[in-house]
Image (tube, rainbow, N blue to C red; front, side, top):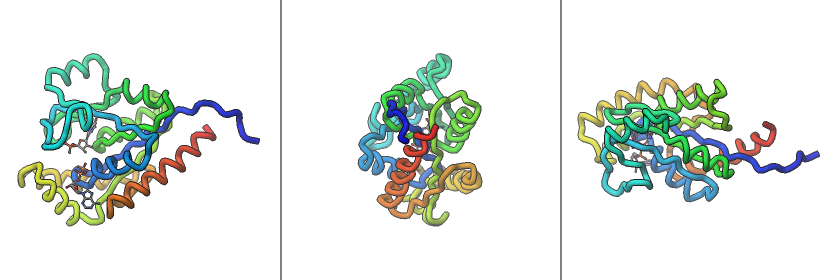
Length: 203
Ligand code: ADP
Ligand code: 5GP
């Protein structure tokens, strides 16, 4: 017999993977496909890239502002990634989940690892699914990083070396999705969300 319907909390969808693999691109596409999905907007000390705006892609903050947010425990997690600081604000994430929205969080491997630990330790009482996005090949990853043209060659090479190391942690994730075509990667994540939503009925 079906259980009594109750208002379900949303699920947290963590999308991680190496820099340049296409996380932002795929998540952007996914947000268009899934109306009940909200983006967790991180704060960062990195300067905006052309086309990025405050409050839409990131909250662009100064180092002093970021430090203040850390002191006030405003972040679920934060990490230094490629020389800049990035943090996931806790309040927005909790509020959206409580409103039954699903939330997608795009973080580096350190952020995903700390979120996973918090969920496992019961410090973050949410249903979460961890997805690792991989490139079809390392050569394609190198090509994509260069194509984005947002970093100079030295930074691209550094990010590429880091990416190869980051690929080693993929077995810790619930799902591995190959970002071959943006559309199909977004569709695969959409299918995962739909399956995971059903699973929460059993919790
Ligand atoms: P990340 O957020 O993981 O650092 P981006 O989303 O910025 O990566 O993508 C890096 C570059 O690769 C961008 O120029 C983007 O347009 C391109 N890209 C992303 N996904 C694909 C794909 N499936 N096919 C071809 N190019 C892609
Ligand atoms: P970019 O500068 O290319 O936007 O992001 C660099 C890296 O930081 C990416 O791997 C991205 O997923 C990650 N990132 C973005 N926001 C956060 C966050 O709030 N926490 C953590 N740990 N990583 C983040």
